[in-house]
Length: 117
Image (tube, rainbow, N blue to C red; front, side, top):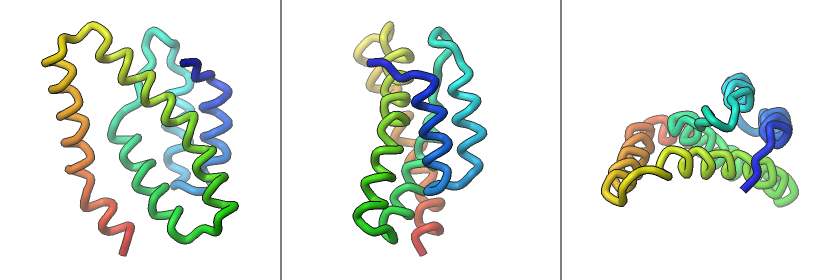
């Protein structure tokens, strides 16, 4: 899996039309991390997904494809972050990590409910 800095930059720029501009700054910060320190915070990922879902429902089909294309490099970045964090964990530790990731999404449920209204 190869997620380049250019991919994250391009996505931050094109995706900012669809999600809150506040993510552009965070994505630039993530992009600046070297591969050794690369990390994509779950809180940021959850908010991006929630805002994307909210935007998606009011778009036409062409805009939806553009939105999903912009989301792909971010998804790959999140996968890379997950792999780096769990590569040396035991199965039990990895499962606990995933449970913690789920908890972050659950804690952000009020955010999507408010945005969806």
